[in-house]
Amino acid sequence: MMFPSRARRVLLLFAICTAAGCVTSAPVQEMSDARQAISAAEEADAARFAPESLGDARRFLEEAEQQLLQEAYGLARANAVRAKNRAVQALAASQALIDAERN
Image (cartoon, rainbow, N blue to C red; front, side, top):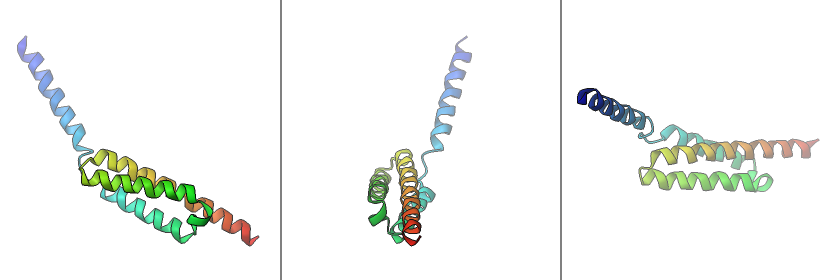
């Protein structure tokens, strides 16, 4: 009876370690995506047309960079994705307003 219980614990521990391995690598691609999205938003004059979204994106990226230094890769990944999403929103808002000004 002890063996099956112990075997289950070992398998559970293995499963947890395996799942944790999915988020223990540095979020290199997510950080790069966030930086590129912020850069594109800045080029579209999001500081003028969508300052709140752009500011959020920059803040999320700064948080992700700090978390990366602390090796909190899961949190860094989540904030990098948030940064990219907010930058994309800023870019879309800027492009819409620029298009509206042209018409």
